[in-house]
Image (cartoon, rainbow over all chains, first blue to last red; front, side, top):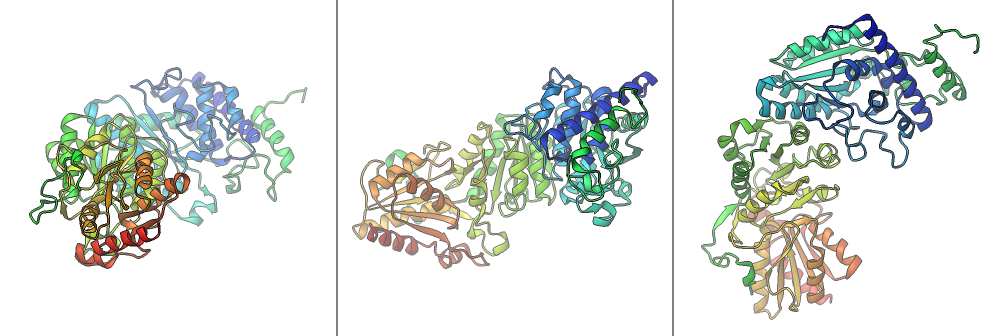
Length: 298
Length: 331
């Protein structure tokens, strides 16, 4: 697991960048949707789907697969984009996001895309479902299951009390096959999390509920891989990886700005580039890796 | 007279009629379901004995999960279990499940179309001394409006047992409404029970009568007593037991309206949104018929004995009888 070569890291970086480009393209095509979370979580998703998960994109129902439960369903653009690039469905289909009858509903819906582990949208319900799945797995396989259950949540999402019901139960049941990953980007709709509903010290909260805690830079591939490896090795209780991310990572005018939580590129917002120019600026930034690639043909 | 095809309890109108809580039928049914199908699992929010899940728990401790007082988690954890092939039964009092966890039931169970069976015990006014906060009189309304769900309201413990067993094979979300107190045993083992089918308990399906009484749950008993009493006043009545509120057996309801021309609905529930509303939705589209509603008239419950409360809130036998006479007069 901790066998990340330099070549692999380069591959993951490039893939994450491709996924960020897809996220922007699909949001522009949709005309609505969430930018900040998907861009921030692109590296974690790339790591999961291209290095960590036991899965087969061509056989999404493979019973032995690891499960990915996306609790903060509004960041589905990053889930859809990552799944497409991983081979679950055609990349071209990403442009159907949020359209009438699309398989890619605005918030994930299993009826439309059966390969999803669950539908989501209303916050706070994913951890409970992940706990249920992990419990079933243990009922069937005992402690020796080879499967892991990854639940992705937002940090503002942890305001919802139901999460803590699930966190309590996971600690009680000592679910070693459960790994939560929190997108700690410090933003939510009404502002910064520490202004809206302060949650530090978050790591202490999880620890007091009986969880093993990892805190990492959510954009560092080695850190992501190594922390998940350590979490997997904890067999007598659940683990959480608090991934510190930059909301809107990859797009200069979006980074760290909560105003981009629920807006796609092309939204008129005071103080931001004109809405008609946003998509062009963003894609140019991503394609040139933030201006690092200069072409005479530009 | 009592429909002989239904093989109802011969002691029905005797003083010695057996009295068993409806929730007990669920407990027995769940135990049997667990014996028949190893995928059946049980979850309870700190009310194991009260909701009768203790029988299942004692026999299958490894398939029982104590959830503590956390009904939202109860629903969504069950959703996760069902995603892995389990058939989860979740229990609490109806006011808390589906009351408190309504949205989790909607999104994580019904929107995902997961086969989770929600048993809401202590439904209705007849919960008694605990008072209004514990008396669920809105649960039929809030569950039947959710797509994909099946809503069952058994009339006695025997029906409750059959409903519990039947729900295992439905492969859909199910809500079963259970009551706390002893209530008369109306049916027998041989009484027909089928999810989605309403049964004529008094009178004959195709014969005419002056009034039809559509009842659900323990109050079916009072409907039958009233049908007998009306005979003495030369008013003929039929009684329909609606054990499945959703999907409603529209054909049988329409046929009852056709053969009677006037109906009374009877439920231990708010008039708004419950059985009466479901019946009205079908009839106003197909065969508009005068209807009187027996149920709670937009009030909260309170402490009292079951009989005191049912009388106070207008669900006594005299109320049902008067409603029958009134609706006949509206023909």
